[in-house]
Length: 344
Image 1: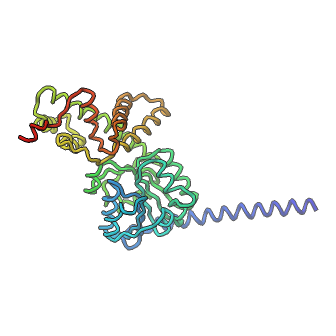
Image 2: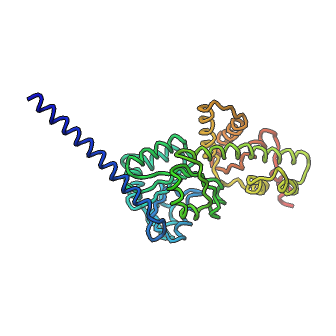
Image 3: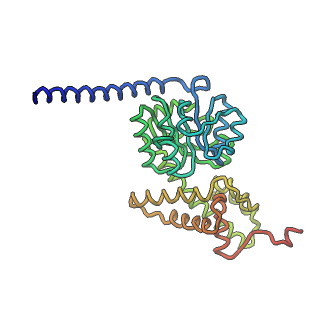
């Protein structure tokens, strides 16, 4: 009797194991078949999560290209312009994903990414059909990108980490740099979508897109410090600042940051193309990764401290060019015109 029970238990275990294996192979087969279908407005339904400063413009390009797009954001009124263009509304990331072949997300923080993608009750992955693709364009933790890739694979789906650089202007002009991590053949297949947003750069396996974006932020942070310090120095030396920026823009000091933000700073236009709050988040992730790598990047640490000072003054919702305000305070100078100057 004991021997018979043992044989039955082993047989049941063998059946269950093979059943799970067959199910897994079936899901992978379905994913491969679906992913192989050409990407296009007539064959690919899109989901878009996050309609902030950049997300709204990015999603609008896909709508203009003729794609059927379902959107979700925490505050529905922020999606009004997209809904007026023909986008559909979903009341959760899970509902959105159930209607989509490819789901994009661009939200604020890694915790938001985890919530909208991995939450077992309401997240996008819970609603995505086998063969579906998740593209996270948020600047986030590389380790989270790897975790999402693993979870998507188990579900018979795929994921790509694809953070972007270019700010609000790049989003409006569809001129973003898109740093992709994941399966290269999948990213190549998705290129028709990315082409509506900017230019794709393949950086390697899962998480490598995020690492590239973090390195990008390290570079931008120190560049912005240099731009703002140069303006403070030129002001103190009595130079005309518009002439100064024009003079250096075509030399070795020229940069994308100067082109995008130099004139805004002179006009005291500190409206966010990229929020100080989000930049502090990005630089914090960079510093944690530096600790993991055993790296000392003092320029990064200095920039992060200066941006934290903006948050301390309640300026976290301003744009990254507001770093100039911190340097004005530090040096007790102001480039803001006096009342008498404004009247003249």
